[in-house]
Structure formats: C-alpha cells, structure tokens
Length: 203
Length: 203
Image 1: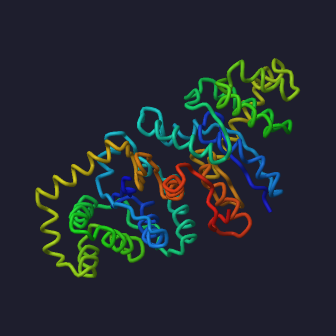
Image 2: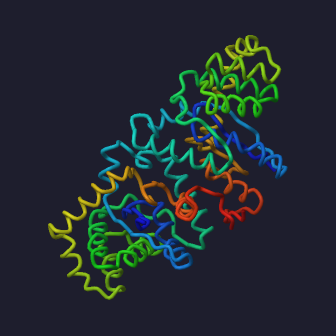
C-alpha cells in the first residue's frame, strides 16, 4: 500500500492550516504522510489558475475564512500574513533538501509558524535563519546547499511528479491515487484511507 | 436578527450539493434560510474569476470531488452533468419569480435534481416543463412571466445586492453579515449562527 502523500508548496496560504494541524493528526492516528514540497506556482501559471492575486474581494474573504478556521483548530495567526511571498522558491528548495535529509515536516511547521504567527515571511533571511537554527542546522550551509543544481533538479522533478498526479493546487493529498485538494478535504482523505469512501466526520 | 441567507445561482455545480441537502437540514434544525437567486456569472466575469472553464485538470477533479461528497450525502447524481449550462439566465429568472411567489426552494431542488440526476439541463425546455408542472404551475405562463422586464429588474437588483454582500461565488451563506462560501462551509455557517464561531462538526 502506497504511503499517503501530502503535497505542499510554501507560499500557499491555506497550507498554513494543514501544516499546523497535520502533525498532531499523524501522531493521534498513527497515519503518516510523505510531505512532498514542489512548485505549485509553476503548475498554476501553466493552468492560468490565479486564485487571489488581482481578486481583492476573494482575497479578503480568504483571510477571514482562514482566521475562522484557524480559531477552530486552536491556532492564533496574525492575519493577513505577508502575501504573496517573494522568496517562495527559496523556501521550497530548502524544503526539498530537508525532505532528502528527513526533517521536512519540522521545517515546514516552523517556517509556516514564523510566517503566519511572527510576521517573518517564509523564505526570507530572518525566517530561514531562525527556523534552521531552531532545528539545529547551520543556516548558511543549508541555504548554500539548497541553491545547488542537485536541489534544483529535485525541485523540478517533484513538480513534474505533482503534475502527473493531476495536482493543480495545495494543500493536496493523494491516497492510493485518489486526489483530495484543500485543507478542508483532509478529513475526506483520511476517511478514504480508512474506509475507501468519504464519510461524514464523527467529531 | 437577520434571516440567514443562502445565495445561489443555477449553473453552479457545487450548488447541487447544497440545494439537495439544505432542505433536510432546515427541517431538522428549524433554521430557515432565505434562498436568494442571482447572477453569479455577472460578478465572476467582473472579477475575471474562471474556476473551471479552460481548466480541464481542475474540472476533472471537481466532478470527482462532487461525486465523493454526493455519495457522503446519500445523493446519486450522474456525473459529469451537462456543463456549462446554456440557459442559466432563464433558469435564474424563473427562480427570481419563484422566490417572489414563495416556491423558490422547491423549484431549485427539482430543477437541480433533474439537471444532475436525469440529464435535463436546468433552464432547458424539458427541465423547466417537468419541474414547473411537478410543482403544479403552468410552465408556459411561468416562463412567459419570467421574461418580463419586472423579473429582469429584480434579477439585476438581486445581483447588485449579492455584490454588496461581497459575494464572489456560490453557494454562499450570509449569517448576520458574515460570509461563508462553498458547500463545504455550510456547517461553518450553521456553527456561526448557533455559537458565533466556527467549531468542529460533532457528527
């Protein structure tokens, strides 16, 4: 049985909700996801999929909706967070490297926390330094390695793999080939994994 | 206290889920929504908001997601349904008239059912004739009245009112000025109505 996949791309706003709540769900259920960073932006540009930029009414709703749902999950972000991110590629290249080294989950949680709760944009110097140091890494060495061609190749390969999965946005979950898109579909994905169908939440 | 509002526009695919399940929720909870038809297309064109047209990968996902969630709700649509609708304005003008006469909910439920379950596109002759006759109406007379300037004025006024609410898509719910977008936010809206906050579903 294929491991459940969590496809994520730093820069996505709704992914804050998933990144922040998934580790506790993994711990409580024993279900572990493979956290898969990639460039959702590249795919969205190909598809002319522009969810919030140049859509101020929809963007205003997004922050309100994220705020309500964050409160439901016991999170306390300072909204709106910096958006769009300038250094999303840098943030995701570090994530690619982190996955290869086995600390992608921890990096994602902390870089999103600092972005949404401490006003430090992900991929920016302040965020990266504090996040990496907090994980016991050497920030300068990690950032330098994230800029190598090997990491760039892995980043593009991950994006190609996401495209083959039919992924068009994040957060997305893949359960045995079945795609679920959106933080609000995480429960559907878990239900699919357990029962092979989507069932109502039971609390 | 303002009546909860359900803003809907025939032509929206996800609204099938809401239209089909909301009456039972209204009956079970005693919470009644004002069903408000309008032209979401006019607003989406203004905002350059194109969710599925020219986005085949996202459209394919949409049908799969609707199918999974329809099954969760005990619905059995034949997917994909005809989309996009040709006669959505006609379908919505009949809904505007129906609301003025007090049978909007019944019309919506039946016209969506025939569209999604019987392959009769909403707004089309077959759908309208069967839907209206089933509600004890004279189809020819209702269709003729829906084409009057008075109904056109009411349709535009409803769309203006939706725009003032900040609505950019459907289904949408407005609870005391608080906007919720998407069939998957109906539970959030109900939670907001009862508790003034979004809380997890309890089954």
